[in-house]
Image: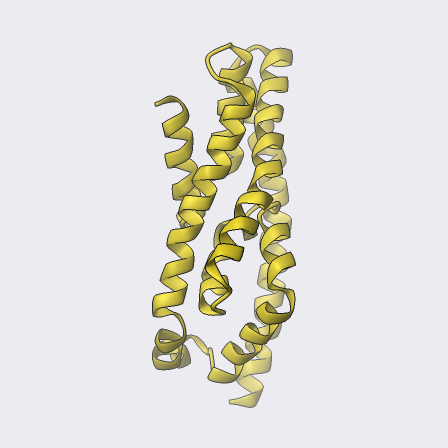
Length: 191
């Protein structure tokens, strides 16, 4: 599918559907190494896809966000007080949180929902989401291109990439589990 395929797949990834950019963009880099795609266009297509998918997730959070959480949040131990805290956090750190989270595996996929719930100004959100995605996409295209040139076979490149990023995903996953356990304990104490 070429560049439109990169846009589509990265949009899916950024719309909170677990389709890892760590596979999509290095594959685009492999195509760059083989002369089938332009380096800059591949990276920018990825960032454009991120912006499109993030927009969908943002609006899901913005449209259904606070009322949905106020109505159904108690079933997952979310209180209005928690939502107020999240909104204050985004009001204080929103710009930086959006930009930097777009550079982090796993977190990058889900940051758009709280930005929508927190009602961050959409134009600012979209700009920061795109700008944060640009270096991530350039980096992953470069990784795929470089590994393809060194290893020659995309299957070997894919194994090298997924091994590295799955290690990072495991660390982030463990951190989330620990933070969730702390959060759950805190909420059960107050209940």
